[in-house]
Every structure is written in C-alpha cells, then in structure tokens.
Image (cartoon, rainbow over all chains, first blue to last red; front, top):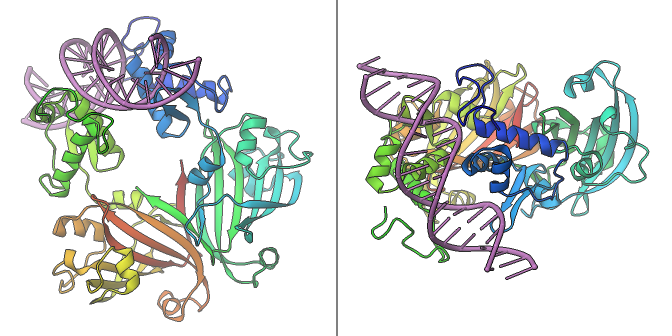
Length: 249
Length: 249
DNA sequence: TAGTGGTCTAGACCACCGG
DNA sequence: CGGTGGTCTAGACCACTAG
C-alpha cells in the first residue's frame, strides 16, 4: 500500500489525508465498481488482500467491516467474503419500504406501460445531474401487491448509461439487479422524500380508485457506488392497504 | 469480566453465548440506562474501563464503537467519550424527518392542546405493550414549521413511567430531552409507518386547511434502551409545504 | 506536557465450512 | 483436514485537547 514506511505517506494533518483502512476501502470499492469482482463473487481472504497491499490483516478487516455495514459485502464465517447481490430479499430489505396490511413484505409484480426516450426536462437534468441536451429513458409502470394494483410509478434514467435498454424485449421487474448484471451499475443507496397528494385522474384510473383519493408520493434519487445519480423514480402509492415503513435508529 | 480465564466462560456454541465485547457493551448500556452515567457526562477512558473489567483495550473499543454507531455515545479525540444528549440537533437528525420546502431542517414550535390521563384503549395496550387496565397519558398538540401550522399530533405514554407529567405546568416542546432529564428514560430508536389519508374535520380546522385535504399520517412507536415501547405517536402532516425525508443506505 | 481517542500492527485461539 | 472469518490480546505511534 505504501512505498515508504508502514506509517502514513502523507502527514496526517494535511487535507485529503485518509487513514490507511479508508485507502484500502476505496481501492476495494473501486474494484467492485469496475467489476474486477462481480456481484456474488468471492473476494480473496483477508490475509491475501493484506499481503497484496502490504498492510496488516486488521487494517483490511476494518475496511471490509465498513463495506459490510454498507451492504456492499456479505461475509460468512468459514466460507469467505462475497460481493453483495441485488437479490429480491436485499431489495425488499433495503429499497422497497412498502409493506402490505398483512405485515409480510412481498416483492411487487410489475405491469410495464411505456418505455421511451426523450430530451431530459430541466427537472430531470437537475435530479440526475445531467447536462442540458442530454437524453433520458422514461419508464411508466403499475406495480401490484398481492395482485392488487397499488403503485403508479415513473422512472427517468440517463440514456447514456443504459444503451440498448429501450429496445429490449422485456424489461425485468427487479431493475436494480438488471442494472448490476447487464450494465455493471450497482445501486448503493438513495434518498427519498415523501408527501401526500390527491390522485390525478390518470393514476387513479390505473389504480382503479376514485380521482382525488389521497396517495403517498415517493420521490427517489438512487445513487451508484460513486454517489452519482442513476435513477429518478416517482411513485404514487395507494396506502389504503399498505404502508411505508421507516426505522429510526 | 471473567472469573476463570481470559477466554470465554461459556462454550461458544451454547445458546445465549455473547462475545466478550458484546457483554462489555451490555454492561455499559445498562449503566447508561440506569443513569450511572448521565447524558452529557464523560465516561472513563478506554484503558480505565478495560482495567476495571479485566479485558483488553481493543475489546472495550469495539463495544464503544458499536455504541457510537448507535448514537448512544459521542467520542471526541483528545477529550473523551460522552453519553449522547437529546439536544435539538440530534432530534432533528435522528427523529424529526419533516423538512420544509426550503430544504433547511428546523425544529418545530408546539402548541399544546390537551393533556389528560385515561384508561388505555386496546390499541394503546397493544402498541405500548401494556396490560389491560393500565392507564396512559394522552397529549394532543399542533406543531408549526416556520410559523405555519403543519402537524396535528397525538401521543400516548404509559402513565406508570411518567409520574407527575400531567400536572406539570409546562410540557416542553422537546419531549425526548425532557424524558431523559426528568424521567431518566432515553429514547434510543423507533419504528414509523406512513400512509396518506384525507384530513378529518377536526385536524383540518386545526391546520387551517379544507377537510379532506391529503395528509401524511405518521404512526410511530418510540423505544427505550431496553427496546421497550415508551411512546405511541400519531402525526398528521400537511405536506404541501414540507416533506418527509428517508435515506436508503 | 499528560491524557485521550484514532490508527496500525502482530500474533493467537476459536467456530464454522467445505472437501 | 485446512482455510475462512470472528474474537481477543498486547503494544506501538499519532493527532488532538486541556491545563
């Protein structure tokens, strides 16, 4: 890791200084972002990474522990350390916060309505950190919970990062897994803001409810491993038979 | 920490086994819960705790690190380790997720409407894990953001845990800080579930909006350090000029 | 200057897993 | 059985804070 001594290369007070374990973490995150290790793949053991980078096992462990806490890795005693997958159970736990009245989380089914490309609107430019003139893919779909149409959803994606997505015969229900497996883009997190609003006529029709019914509007920007916006998603939820869960910890 | 060796007393495979650093953590959490150390107070140094308990500094550090991640402690290099306070900035960051249109978080003002005691309803019994026949304190208030009435809020507290609260001349705006300083009860976390609903007549009047306006309904159960329910809170928010923020990480 | 937390290292034993 | 992650220890140097 260091060319000189086992201590830090740079003086610790200087700006831009990072502890050794953070440098190790950055390197490992970069390798995952660049698909040097694929989702589901096993990483070298702590000792091997430590030897490769010329640091101690404890330093590598601290980097791996942080990445595990951020759900980038999954560690299993006796087996090894693996790059996390966007499987349904992870999505359900980390990204899909809508739970039906039963209290049992379920992955929603999707009915695709539209897929199209367009010049990014000013709002899309802002949310996705694009340049004016960039294009986006717009997707509209209705998602059902236990067979009941519940969410009318609109997505915007930077066209540049998802070549070929529009022409694709079938756009999968689990988008984040698709982003990872077909485009090498890992959704690492995001920010949501929620409001209540009256159902517009079009969405009310799609959900089979009266116009003006109160809906939960969820506005999400999803971020990749580098913290860059990847997806802007706007979901209108009929919460008469489900609710949005949020943990305070 | 251990009577016998430096290794574990109990075989690691046995049920109920806890790693040493978790045992240390439990002990320290219990001391905070029992106010052996008060909020804002400084803890002994890592070395002192390690010596007292007969474990290594690294083991104590791991316990303290977890408690810091859970916002129970605040550590400051060169100063020491402190029991976290429920000051406004912490509440704002951890518990109050409503942000005005400006994007700048502010602590809401409160207008108290009612404080009364009553026999717990079946729903209150369930939410607060009470026994049938127990009593609760019910509080109703309206909270304003930047001077605009925005939230109509209803709270239920176990009467047993808050003696004297009802007769109190002035119930403070920052309740969690009050719970900590006057009752020794630390709110460590909670769970919220959100829905959209039409404003009932009474709440609409309180918020100065038309009846039936879509509101964001937030249903919260707050938990103490032992994970026991302390407060059931039901908030109806007019989200036309604010929104609820939720981070996905 | 003394004491604190922050980082880094080295080595040990353990439980768990697969072959 | 050998290799993995999980835990625990001991000791070192550093940066930051207070007096």
